Image 1 (cartoon, rainbow, N blue to C red):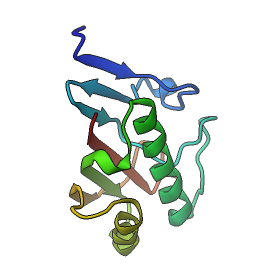
Image 2: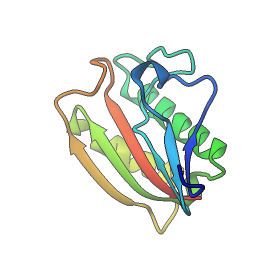
Image 3: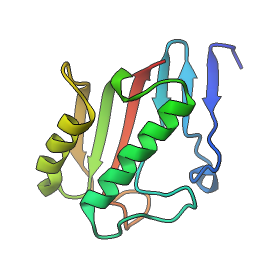
Image 4: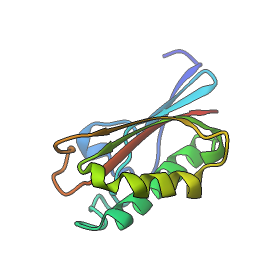
Length: 129
């Protein structure tokens, strides 16, 4: 493995049971795996509550970025997966709460389901290191 490619390790790692690395630092960029409402203990947070799930998802993103030596202000791209596009207005509010202009590039899609059926939102990001 090249020195310019480093896996990001967190402890505890709630993604480990799924054989997923939380993210990779590659050169000057950080690529996170999709983050969702999964707590450190591996349990789903906010089953049936979109706001609670979105809050946990954003907290997970912040945590992994911090371990990687970055933060929310360095996010350049987000991809958001929703199981119900009716929650789109809440995503717009979350963008305003967690990011500042110029906002990250963004893709948002509705999916029929996520990896675990209780999950309502998943977000992956690319950030500067």
